[in-house]
Length: 124
Image (cartoon, rainbow, N blue to C red; front, top):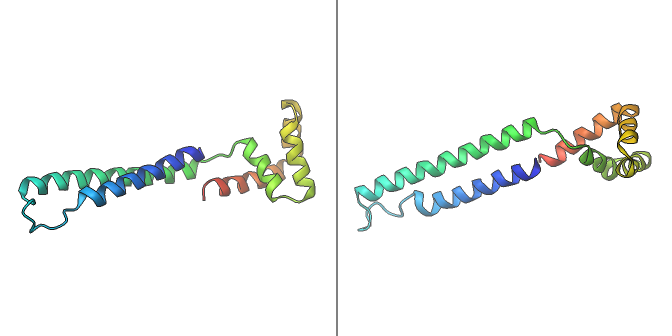
């Protein structure tokens, strides 16, 4: 999910660069500027702005729907927790699926707390 957000941000940067480079004519009084150029610039400028707006909406949607992977939650426990939570996060990483489920259900409230930490970290 984080990759998708970064990809959309890259798209925004690309289209902003295109808009700055091609979307706005340097000077309407220049000899190269005519009605055909104006129409082309306007269409391309609108295309750039449409792509920018779309990617901004996509980033907002991805951030709202983001649900951290269990691995990210365990990493948040390791990076932001106290000694017990760090140990539990490390234990989760090396456990089999049965024991991972036990950790998640036994400490469900802490798991939910660190899941929120992971979500905030991934979507900032």
